[in-house]
Length: 454
Image (cartoon, rainbow, N blue to C red; front, side, top):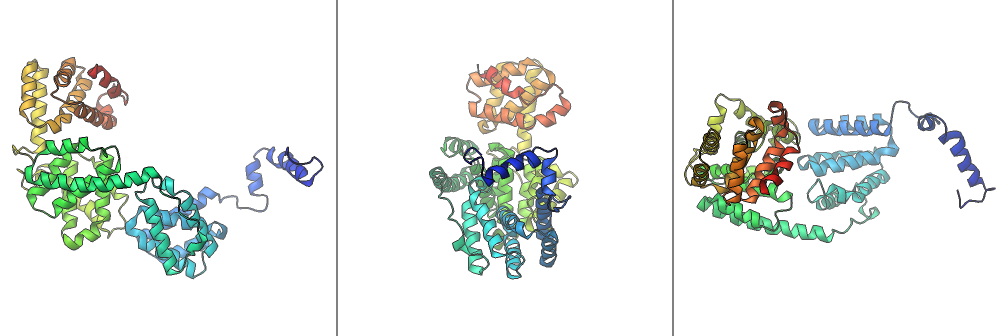
């Protein structure tokens, strides 16, 4: 208002708006309904209905019903939101991409969504593509591909869109790092299948300068299982054992399995039993405590339709886990024996670690405990020693094991990296521990770590 003359119409309009409308109680609702706007329909309500109709369409594939629902919304001025949400869903769920693009094509051909609203919807995604890239790997590349496909089919005028923003220099560096990592990972896995040396794999990954990129763990999981599925049972067993030994964050493993499921259609051309193999790898990850049963639901939320490969994999994995004596059967699913050089299964190693700690806790000698841990010859799995020790300390408030952990660390028997992995595993499972140990808190492992390393 400061820039307007006091005797101008503009000054008068702004003054009346503030005095008569914006200062009144419940002014937002009054203004919304001033010209007969719906008392029950808000922007959030419409967005919710758009989401629901798109989800139902992905499951059913019924284009006529989807178009009918769009008409019933009676918001032609808001159709750009339908375009935006449809394209984002296509970017998130690549298996449903064709179905979702077909829906937009039909709405354009029938005049249900006009070209202006279509262009506006794509434009809004272009404006937020950097934010989308945080959740959708290669979001910029996927969007560019979708724009090209829509333009080639004639229902989008690409020339009316603004250019996609340039890839930041940091992103270019990350893309090149991912390519380099994929090549290195391939070499690491091939060497591992020949030697069976988990420690060497762990050392190579820890020394990799790309290890700070979150998506690399998921890429490693996908590539590891993809290579194993194309080989014999020995390699499949070795892959499962490696996965349980490396102790990747559960979210990264989930993302790896989601990527495997998304590419399963192509994989099935070379591996006809891809559903059975993926289901077994998924069930084995649960038995090995790499994933919790709850993570199956998270993976399932990204599977599309009852007939999708992802849903078939998930249902088969659940069936395997529900079967009688499922744990033993799944552990021996590929014959065992390929898991490590000494032939121990992962459960045998966990059991042996538990007995070593129990013996020390009941009055055993600290040197004997150190020798026993060293004789396991599994330094890549020392995070399990850390986890079991911390859980026992919290459950029984016994400082003997705390002192043992300190000795393991100070003597160099357990490395800092393995210590951090062990603490991280405890932190991830605190919600479950709190059910049994009331004194558990999410911050406790964070306080304990500096005390141990001091």
